[in-house]
Image (cartoon, rainbow, N blue to C red; front, side, top):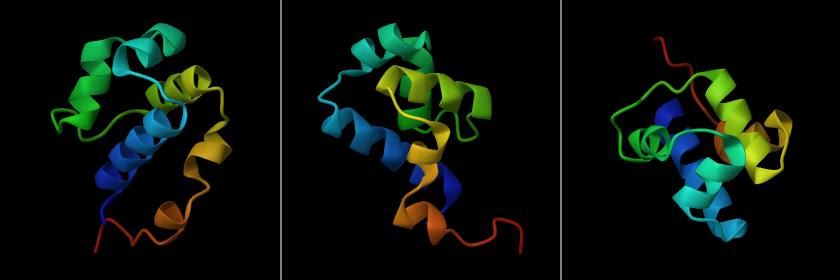
Length: 80
């Protein structure tokens, strides 16, 4: 799995766990709903770390919590 897909899947997982809609996450994180949708639907394949941190703030978790998953630990090097 690539990094983009792993980030997207983690956001979707957290939306489910926290029972949040995209709109609520946008309100809690101060990230525009269109930006979140662009990440989830593939228009933005390289979200910046500041955006991810803002999403984490909206979810009420740290960056460490966001990236501390088996999927992120298993990621292969992007550049071969």
